[in-house]
Length: 263
Image 1 (cartoon, rainbow, N blue to C red):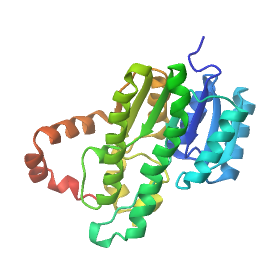
Image 2: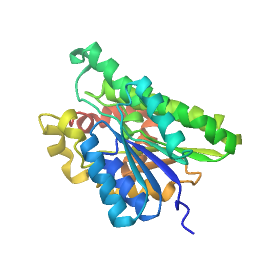
Image 3: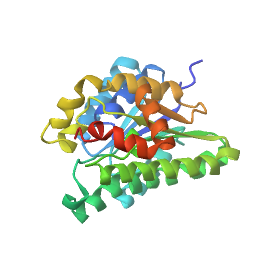
């Protein structure tokens, strides 16, 4: 039997990009999908597609993860109406490419509210159930930007460094409870992320040939569900660059300067 058959899989930021692709591929394997995002119209469209094409249960809830009261209410409804969560994919997030000097404090608060606090809030509300039954999986979408910080990503990288730190500590806390924690660290992906992050389009033009396909990233995520996979790092060459950077930061910053200033 497929390991995802009948499992309750909650995905934040499910209206597009990686979140949408994860939902489609998990539905193909018989998962019961709970779709969360701010755009309810898009969620309803995806919900109908999943139920009609794959014959699975799918549910849609409007949720802004930055609103912690709303997070608590929605997850309360999920547990009451659908059941305990088997897999939580914390995918909601956004970024902007600006230097620290040009970043407003309100932008900082808003990005941390979504990328970090929202992720923590969603996680906290599924943990009691997972710990009690000693099974479950938290999958946090981080970024290679959480491993290598580059110019014009001071704020975005900071949020993703926070996600990695939280996830690594959480993994150790849950080790004896048999609850898995996986971080997904992709490089640039062909999604609408860059419509906000890269308004000029300069960065996308510079790295277009290196961009990942969302379906390929989603396939890796779904394959890892309910397995004790620590990290998913894509693409492989960027993962190697991150390891090199950790060992030789000064050398990397000196000779990799041109690559770092692609934004």
